Image (cartoon, rainbow, N blue to C red; front, side):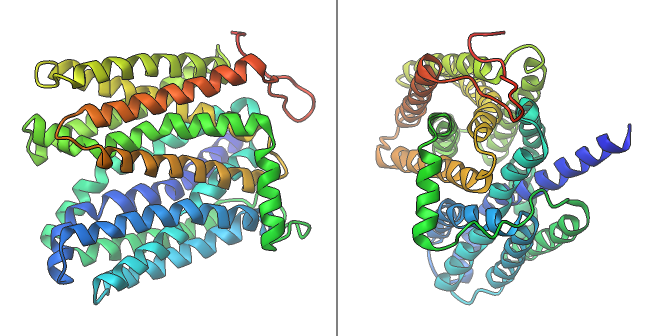
Length: 412
């Protein structure tokens, strides 16, 4: 393995670690909900607001970091965000009450989301458009381990040491990522003083990104197609444990299997990209996912009878997400070079906004069946497919810097 390849692998590992900070922060403390509620003299429903606060912090925090990483480069904002995340984690570990805890969770999100925004921008900075989808697929492999092991680790820590130690571990992890970032992540963009941080100018820059038709359509497609996964996360515990009667251990195993499908499909995508374009792969994957979701809705009306097909369809849905996410992310970022930070922030905001909305819709229409979850998943998949159809029907091919036109649909 030559030095260049080693350097690429190192960058991917660092970016994967930064991206994994979010899933760890969400999934690792879930097993500690009961302990947090008892310790802070409140109920689990109130503790749940800390999760909502975290999602909102990620959603809007990304918009803050967009122009910041375009103005000051990528590395310094990452180090600042990790410092904030570390301090907020210590605050959570020492929280005297639920209000303090929720406030620190919000600060955690504002600090941790910098890795999501800067990571996409760094990939766009360092790698040509033709290979960014492969890089994002590799990142999914690195960060995809987090949702599998985080609940287990969190449960063990909460049972053996108490829930506060979960946040001490998160503080240590973010401190470790600060050191790794400082020493091993190269600065991919020089600071640009022409990028204004005045609110009016920031809004203008975001509107300029949204006026880019290529970015807008692919960002919407990415937001819609990834939001079905949030619906699954929001409704899966009820479906598997309440309707199917699974215990915590069984639920953990099937959750891990489904995440394995997501990760495995993201690596299959790397092989597909050797022969087909991201546009083509995205279109047919979205079409397949929409068909899967329609079958999922049908089976949801008698989910007990169709228990096995329902579980298989969930697996196939998440596998499609593993293929779609890296491709739609790469296509969204392809036409945004100078404003990669703002584009990354807007893309992340779109994904998180629609994702949070999908989770809320599952709760809003909850009727003690699997239908709301399946219906929300199907609705978002169809919306994403419509966006891709519009783009492929009326859009222009993606052009890389240097004038090279990438293969576009329906080319192989």
